[in-house]
Length: 158
Ligand SMILES: Cc1cc2nc3c(=O)[nH]c(=O)nc-3n(C[C@H](O)[C@H](O)[C@H](O)COP(=O)(O)O)c2cc1C
Image (cartoon, rainbow, N blue to C red):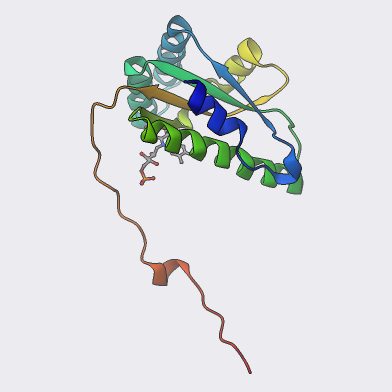
């Protein structure tokens, strides 16, 4: 776990702001997050099966790390900070994979964002979460767009 958190700590960040805070929940708190997600989507009839699916994975996982943005702001700063947090998330996923630990990058905890902020880190904004556990599946790589669809080569005019 420390190696995974360390990989987030050393991630690159715009202007070295390191605009993140990580809260590692206990098993009880992790399970409460999952239950609450299910309760909220069921009560509010949110038609998003992926939230329920995510909650089930959180239950199966050993750990849940909540990832908060510590520098809530607008405009360019925010855009850059979000990229920095993305780099920290990716570092943690890569480090987990290196250690043969299963990881799931989670955005769906947004359905109880306000509650999680109030309870665990009221000076920040919840950006995403990371579930960690023993891998019990080997998902096939999902399709990617062809390079030709995502790259524009500008012609050199000599
Ligand atoms: C920002 C972000 C948020 C995600 N949120 C969720 C989530 O809430 N629940 C989930 O099951 N997977 C979530 N994922 C995982 C993706 O759905 C997907 O399984 C993973 O990125 C690998 O598939 P891909 O190659 O299509 O990206 C998220 C991934 C990213 C990058």
